[in-house]
Structures are given as structure tokens and as C-alpha cells.
View 1 (tube, one colour):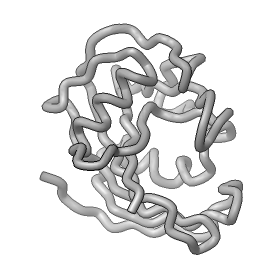
View 2 (cartoon, rainbow, N blue to C red):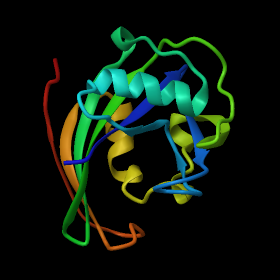
View 3 (cartoon, helix red, strand yellow):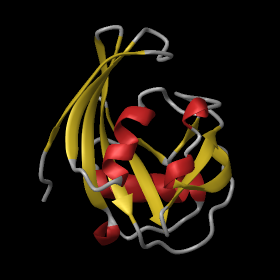
Length: 156
């Protein structure tokens, strides 16, 4: 099973997003995150990915899990994605080989038209305080959500 992270770096009702420069989702605006390596813990992976992609130091203790999703493309399971929220971090965002053009977007003005189409369904929920587990079914190229479902949960 492929496991990945998305790290929502927030400050004053704004979210840090950047443009993905390579790999899965190239050209889309997204939050930092990526694959969890074998034997790596979720929070360790999220902190590592934020530093690699955005140059920001995040302490694992500052990361709060807010969601977990199963992402399917044309009914084929692609990966499990853990969404973590952080309100405390060190450093300023800087471009990397993986991501660039970072901007802080107000929660009510997120650029959903340039993001994964599923983001507009789940991201407002977690930014409003809901803690969820869900499933997003995309068409084969990820340009359309065929089905979205979730349940509210509590995370440790």
C-alpha cells in the first residue's frame, strides 16, 4: 500500500500552497507533502517532506492529524493519504526542485481551480475544524470526482 502525507501549514486563517514542479500532480497547486518511506512514521514523513519541498522546519509534536483518505483513480486504489495540520513552524518558505511559487492563501480564497478537484470537497471541512476519514474516487486522470464520502472521527 502506498502511503502519503499532505501538510497544511496555517497561520492567521491562511494556508501555504505551492506549485508542484515534478512527479505526481505536476503543475497543480498543492500543500507540501509526499510519500512515506518504508518504516517511517507519518509525522516524521510529513516533517521531512515539508522541509524538502518548502524549506520550513516543522516539529513532529506540532503536527496534528486532521484527516486520512483513500484515493482511487478509476476504481483502482492508488494511495492512503494522511492530512496533518500545523500552526507552528520555523523559517520562511523557499523554492525547491519539487515545489515553488509559494503563497499564503486566505481560507476563503483558496485557488481550487488550480488544485486537485477533490480538494474543494475535503479541505474546507478540515480547515473548519472537522476531523475526517474518507474516500475520494476520481476518473482515470484525476480531472473529475466520481464519488466522495467521509465520516467524522477522532485522532490521537
